[in-house]
Length: 142
Image (cartoon, rainbow, N blue to C red; front, side, top):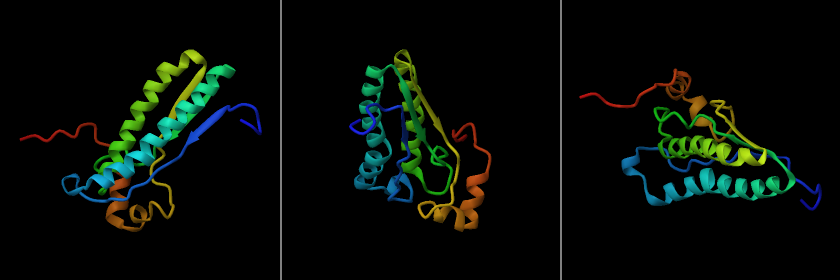
């Protein structure tokens, strides 16, 4: 704000995943760290930006969601929960902030070849899991 006098766009591109494994074995620290980085940070920053955007008559908030929205992908379970929540955060903010001429959107581009996602694209089994079509239901039939 000091340098440019306004904020027109915020791109939330945060993500961490300190724990890969089943939810049943997850510890509270893994939940807290993942939620703080993947949800709380983007949430709080978006509120700060939206308040400034409201004052200036509009703006754009964007969330990069990545691959995590797919719970069947490898062992990204806590990460997947946070990214699914980010989809809902996008929808809620879009509905609320729209009246202030603030657009809120997200994209989920899938696996991007980075050091962070290395175990997904280097392991053939995990790589195949990432490119499978998304399932529409996770209900288990008995």
